[in-house]
Image (tube, rainbow, N blue to C red):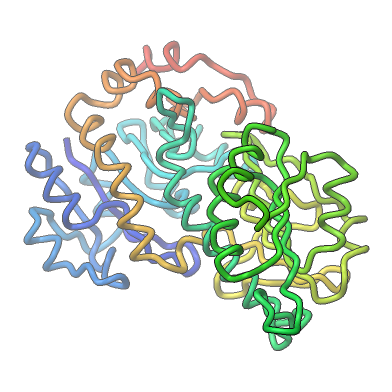
Length: 373
């Protein structure tokens, strides 16, 4: 199979779909790889590195898409990239389609087979291709939130960990999943006072066993959520329903009652955000203010640490890339029900129920859609 790796063009996105090391592995399996020039240059992977690994270098995205049968990316294809997709392509990347009608419509029109990293599962029901970016985003959320609390950034002027004689900041983490756990580790490490809210008592029990009296755990109800948010200096939104739009848990009314200069970091913004006041931002302009509260809603947070993120992502995506290349997409998907869960769009049909519901489109069973490939 011929695999194409275009340069990412989303705002301040420097990650790359395959590293030179991953390219070498793919080529060892007898496949061809074409990488767009300078695709990894911003994070220290030169065109010469890719050539040494066995790849060909293409001068443009058009040349990459023309050569390739499978496109491996990081972020969802932008409009100019979607225009290059055809029925012969398999697309393997993050998609986050639930809140994104233009992308959904154009991928359907392309006729391509589109597999989303974020809905691939494992035998334990976890999301192995989302996990490393959730780890990165969770850790970054505290780093970004602490920076936004600085007065020059519009924040309250509060030091997250405090100093002797001065209380630390109050941090509320909404969701005790992968994002929440990594945010928690960072917040506790910096000395903040942390409350974690979740509806899964087993999750709260586990976190209590790990951190004990260093944190407060709360079963998430409207009352506990409202109290925690209103009294927080920094709120991290880390809720996730795989493939679906994030629920709007933090209302505009709660935001109005927060202290001026408090900070909201919405890590769920890729899936539409978990706060009524959230709107996607970029690394170029990461924040805005609503009712005196600073909002950080960057839709590609891990792009800020692009080299670390790329390496972490390739660690988990490479086996799937090789499987898809070795067997072809239809066979690889049929043989692996967990990879099949990643199939969101196939030959003009929506094959993920959450996406279909969110976009008010007809759901087609993935196996039925694949029979047409």
